[in-house]
Length: 410
Length: 142
Image 1: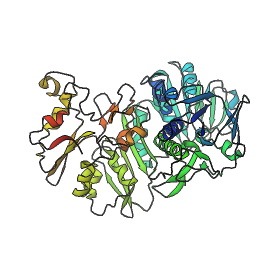
Image 2: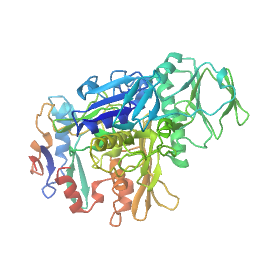
Image 3: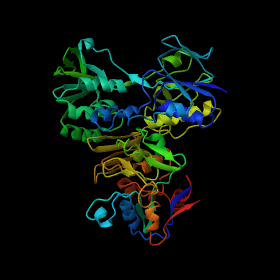
Image 4: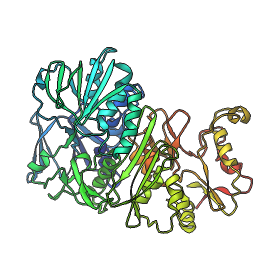
């Protein structure tokens, strides 16, 4: 019998619980949750504001999840991790012991030190359900909203509240929207679409100082607002791991078995830094599918397994006001680019004979075939790129490969 | 577990499976009312490659990427069948982004949909299989 402890109660934690239970149905599992909620689907907080889901439907696992998996859920904030004594201490002094620990602390909003920020009455981050509920209370049909950050979080927030406020302005120091996943041309298409919905942009510009309801921009412009949303960026929550002596870079360093540099301590999800197999380099891959897969792999290995997790790549499927975009992998400058603009934009990046990244805006159907080509590093020597760039299809594979894919149990 | 498999040497590329699928999942009793003059959203698709045609539908993987990747926790495995809870799905299409077969697609209301083997519709067994005129799609244990 082992004592398993998980710090965090998000997607990676659920993966970890399910991973442990796939191998060990007996030992005790304790989950420490700083948020006083049953596990919910974090990316759905904008859909909640938009009215596309509600508090019940956005539960990531059913109400009886913890009970069914024999998990003790403890609400509290972990403040101390002692790797030698194998204990975690909570803010209320409660001490929990463990044989194996998984750190699933996620990330938290990064707020630059803006001058005068404290004078802004209605200011919010947009990371948690509580952030979303607090923001909802402040919304009114007349509200002028300023969102700092035109990334995934800022723009999803804009979409979520667009029907409930008077105006939305989004600013970002970057010269384009969604700079982490789109190149400038694709970003311009998405920006134009968002502008059609009435969202205003101030790009290459950001707030430097606030005074109550006014933002003073780098460009010298002044923006009046009633509600401020700060979505500048996020940082991996690594402090507990660092305390315990785990090596930390941008995230907690993990190997391909989710093991940190301290034996018996694992990490998974947005707080961790593993490998991006599309580039072969270390990277924090802060996306939900990755959090689940890393969590589950960690859980299996905590329970005596020895499996390595490979093929993790950055990827995003995200839509705004009906226009979808699907992206994955990397877009290296020396890659060969295959483009099709019959409908929307499709851009495939090929390097060393394999697909290393893609961007699709518009019809994202079957984009998973592109993603699998990246993940599996499929050689494209025999592929008809003119066909493939127009539409992904299993026809890209040799007939025998395709028959094997469709003919067996997978 | 029994799954839907395609015998591509027998496939005529007639697309009947797509129509039978859309009808079986329409909830309507009249095929004409269900399909005529409407855009259809079948969960099986015929692909074509230099004269060869074959049907593609969900493989009901034993370790499905879509289940692990769903941001809403809306996809689960029920007795081997991979199911999408339409009520929970918000239509982000992450499942479309990860399915290596291209077997998940947005349905008429934007929520993702895919083959669920006709277990819960009026057909009760895969409609693409029962309606295939040439036994090019089969439902069997392998």
